[in-house]
Image (cartoon, rainbow, N blue to C red; front, side, top):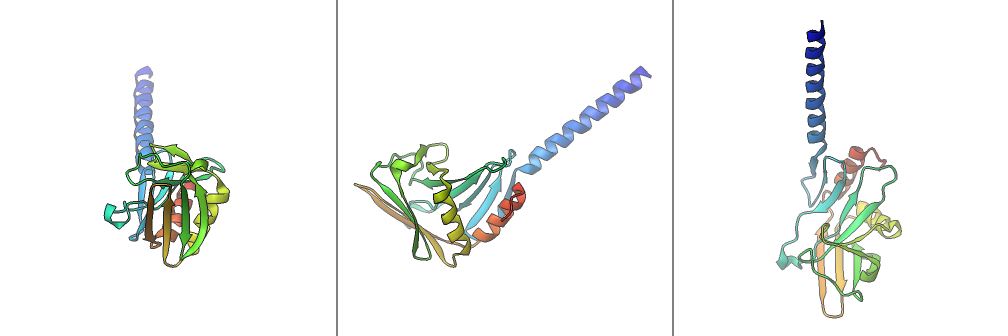
Length: 178
């Protein structure tokens, strides 16, 4: 009788271990919209909405990415990448984001936090992030990010293909309303 309990306990532990590995592995998912924008969630369900990397000869400056942790009421972070992801921009510089030719946000670098792990400058300020997301969600053509600093100027654009579908997928993954 005692041996049977040990065997059952071993089988139960093995099943639980396999299921937990399978759950963690399946949580890391990528949604390929077939367009410019895609979404990915890691095993902790922190999700990112981003474009493909911009080639250096297409302006260099990448389009923003958006990151949200899987926590109740987690704010969406907006990452404004630098050309190579680790350079320091002048605090006097300014990012401007436009959708379909309409300016949506102007953000001084001094109001952003440099985060080399994210590859650029980050804001969690929802009064900046949400208008950009809302405009991009209903935008028809393109999003443009420009950086103007005392010694440098960069501009990059990306079409909005796949953004809406990627946002919807991300919301479903994390159980948020769209």
